[in-house]
Image (cartoon, rainbow, N blue to C red):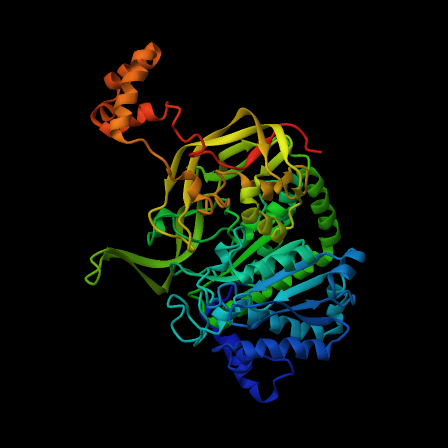
Length: 592
């Protein structure tokens, strides 16, 4: 199919529904009736959910999976022509499940209107039922419900339509697409319970991106494609590339990377594609040995075109799952077994994008860069009347930035910290066991931080913490009753390590949940330290030699009274040995 001019295509899409308003079919949306210039309120989602289930009771089930902080129901639809409309039936019939997630950012609401439109057409068409019978679609029209009802114009100033929309964050101002691993919000907690119940093979998260002005209508990224389990990564690549091909044939000009410039506002800097951390939806699901897909329509395309390209993406996914879903589910199940055997193997917690780049043709517009009389900054101005091919670098080669060896047995959470970890373990469906008796003389590895750096500002209500250190054997340790044992031999081993390993980007400790451990609580007065230092120098020639060497070789140390006194305090019996000592330990022998 030849590529259509994007604005012309959007006009065609918008005009068609306007001409047929008088004869709109049942189950149509406010968006359709407005010619995709507007989007409906959440009351419409509630009504449509119930109306679809009433109209197609053998193929659609409408249910609540949570309640928002403002008391609104979180709605989901289960859709399948097989009649398997609950998780137990889907599992019994070995049907792959796809989770279609709309409105995690409620200003980016393309997915809600696109998928309701798709469902209306497909359910009414008996020729589509064979495809729908080979899977179960779990559709969440709006994840961020309270944010959806924070509704007005200009909530998405970088976006062309709809006329009004919801807001990016929840009523408690959580960004849900930063909350997948830490799971602070009630909405995310409800979502994770839904995921644990249904265990979707593929999650597809529907967004609209910000950014520059260019011709490409949509980006499709997926994980795993180059990390994690090798066989599952091949499935991820195959599925991503299949959706890309389908979109190309429909004239949408997709790209397979997130189109954000390396240098803000500078097209010549090109693009970089790495591995997202598990705070993001598409960085989370591959840690469960499942596939996460991120759909980002381009905010500068009109709303009619964005809805249409989103619909085409989900439609493509449905077709690929119908064709390959059972086989891919078998591969995912096998990856569960391989993940359960990661003990003692290297596991990457962070990734970096290499400098190596390839030059790509990117469909942009003519632009100029000149100082602004408003801001004084160098600004880029685009001319959408002049399409232009940009020859720009794309950096998408990755390498581990932090790799650690998985523990041979597992992790032990002391009783004092069980209340922090236990709810998170349950939300993520991680296997653990409470130890109700005291444990004595357990050989362990301990992580001590050589550097503990607190963030200067808060993120998502947390003061984040960056740790540098290493695991080391420190003999034996005893534990009070109530400790939690997390075996590494489980399918979610990679997820366990991202939650528990102290240097993982979204570990609980990295989100500042354990900052007390890294704050000094006791100290030695300077006059006491002075007196004790003289005794230590007189009694320990090796210490005296080390101190004098530091004075000679380290000018900053020599010039700092506090560092010189700290040198002695840190070697004194009074020093707090638990400062900078991560409380979670690795156990060196199997726990019975």
